[in-house]
Image 1 (cartoon, helix red, strand yellow):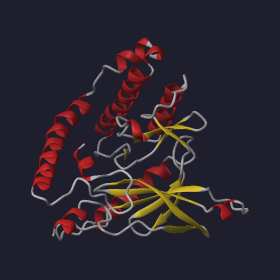
Image 2 (cartoon, rainbow, N blue to C red; image 1 turned 180 degrees about the vertical axis):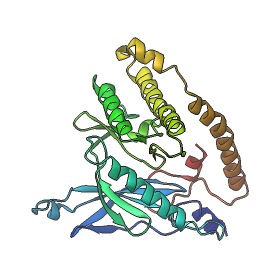
Image 3 (cartoon, rainbow, N blue to C red; image 1 turned 60 degrees about the vertical axis):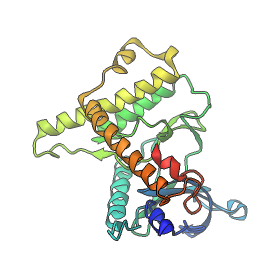
Image 4 (spheres, rainbow, N blue to C red; image 1 turned 30 degrees about the horizontal axis):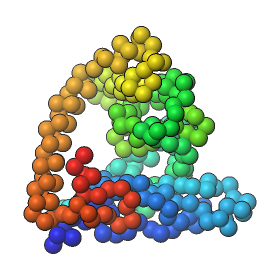
Length: 278
């Protein structure tokens, strides 16, 4: 009972991630699982050395993201995984050809998709940040916004990559949104929503710059890093009680023996049960 319920808290349940996958005729092998949580599992796959020497046009490393397929307490949730997959692929396709956006490669089953791996380090690593990094990240955000997309997850430093070329890259578009001119059946309301959500993106960018490169922060950027838009305030008011509720629920499950802190989902390198409390 314990193991069965606990496995339902993860996107793939007890099912392990594939040890190898085939993309465009090349066979890639599992190297590392970056994350496995309620909504998705994300893993790195790499071509074997023997294949790297061959004349292939395919990248050496790719990422497989499998969205939720596991049911929860008998409630089917594969539809959610399919929706999340379609949504993220749609966003990536809308942003294709932008330098700094992962290159979508292929669908994988009904709930998964493959994209090219970006060499680099997360913004939350100890790697030195290039002086022009945040200026280039701002330009990338503006290009994203010009395509009527808002990123929405810029508050998380681990979604921002310092590429091996020193340039900024964004990953994980799970909660990003495309906002057409008449999303709310009104140009004015749609523009108001888009402007506020894009302002939230800019706010989080300069919050990171304020903390990580304060000596490079311009006066106008300092001001923007302190301007909390109404949607960010609303998110904070809503997210805090939900986060506390989730923590209380997981602590209850741990205390009743329905979860074990030392248990790690199949092939996962990161997400212990206590990591879900964050």
